[in-house]
Image 1 (cartoon, rainbow, N blue to C red):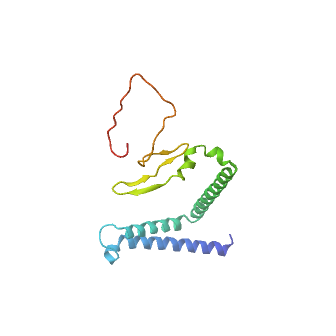
Image 2: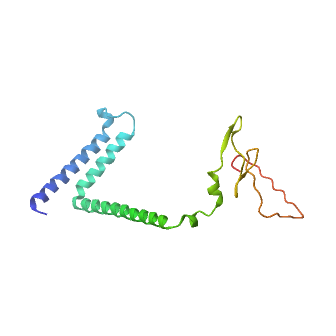
Image 3: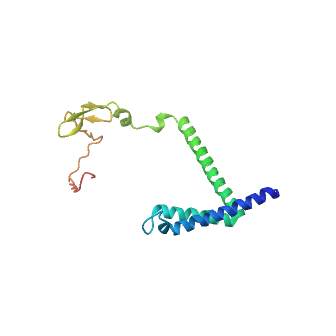
Length: 165
């Protein structure tokens, strides 16, 4: 750096350290000067943290610039990487045929079903008979077994719990 720019940077760092020290003093004495009331509050803590950051930046001068450049470079690289990954995912999504992604027939039939409001019940489904979804006349979904299983002994399973079961 040229000498004039270097001396301006030194003065800027010195001013940063002085302002940081001033913020720390104000944070410590804020109860005395009447800015805050009580032991520790959010404003007092933020003044102290800001002062500490400014003071450390003023003291470390050249290292502060290096740390700032490293942080900015890391953040920019992360954003660029996420944008590239997002564009790649969008490209893969566009190139993948919809038929191979959605194979479930029930997904296509859900939009064909309808509901109606019933007093004291809320919403009930209207009667519907599709390839995958069947709603009975009472408004409840009917599960039709694909394979009839005949067992000699039936197993009873009891479940106890709330609405999440």
